[in-house]
Image (cartoon, rainbow, N blue to C red; front, side, top):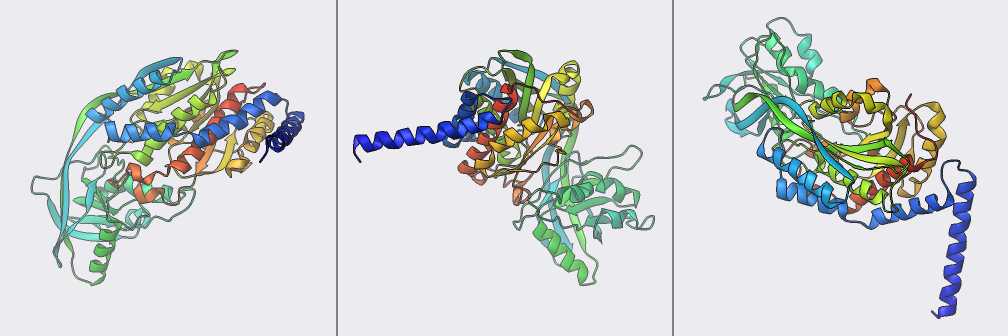
Length: 469
């Protein structure tokens, strides 16, 4: 190809780009042609950057599991502060968050009769210990929590309750809500029916033989019993044995301990705005993880991609409004970091112009939606339009709920957004020893970074601020 022909092609490409930008600018009251060109460039930079991968690789390799109150949790806080500082954020700080500390020591289970064999089990968070020799009793099976709740008084007296509810698989993860109720409250209801122990099919869509942990709760005035989950394969095995019509006896041995109040820290960093520094876009994830895996999908990916997105979104200098990344503490134990953040920053929450949390793995973002004042919807549509090339669909429902750490923010009617990842296989790995770095696809992670970078840049630099409902 000769230089003259190359020059002609370059001129044509520049002309097409200029026409496209001019057309977009003609429709926009919020962005200049230069800014829209910058958005396109930022998007491309993100799609070519391995920054998020490098961050999540470092976090999961050099720190590993980060259960609240453990040495890994403390190391993660130090890691995050150091990474933010190395990335050139204008401000980096921490804020304390207290939580009920719980430690897992050991766990095992076995079918004693009619066919002796081991089971793959895990204690649910906050579970009490069994005696050193474990507990041994006949199981009684229920299809779901509702069936247990409606069973007669003392229906499980002296037995171990087994709930065999199978979670449905959906791209948006809507099967999680119905399944997680048994994890949260199952041990309480089982104890109220006279049970001496509780075991459930994991909150999982997996076919592997890993048990899935997660938070569980007790109720004052109700006897505490051991609270556990078994792998889906073992739940199927128990069900088949029960179906034979013979009594099924199992042994559960859990050694764990509640250790009073623990303290961790939200890690916060900010690129400070040039015109409206007090106003800020808030993005982030939660820094802690469960102890079984290395927390790559939950939520190392969310931590890494939002850190990287904020950095790339400021490639052209200071934004008009600040871009703040919050890495929340102790999410897995009950949103304790998020609650502490809201309490510590209650007087300035009205300065949030847009908020989104990434806490659903690392698959591609397929949908985008808002929860904002009607007057801000034209701006939201402009942001969405710049994500179309990333195959992100604008849902236009204006009813986004965003991530779990933003739940404590809801009473303050902040402008909330959901950049929805494909969660079809997320619950295959969620809260298991199988949540490791190899489950993250670098190309999909880059697409996440691109979407978040576009979102952060445009929300921070628009001529008008986004308002909450």
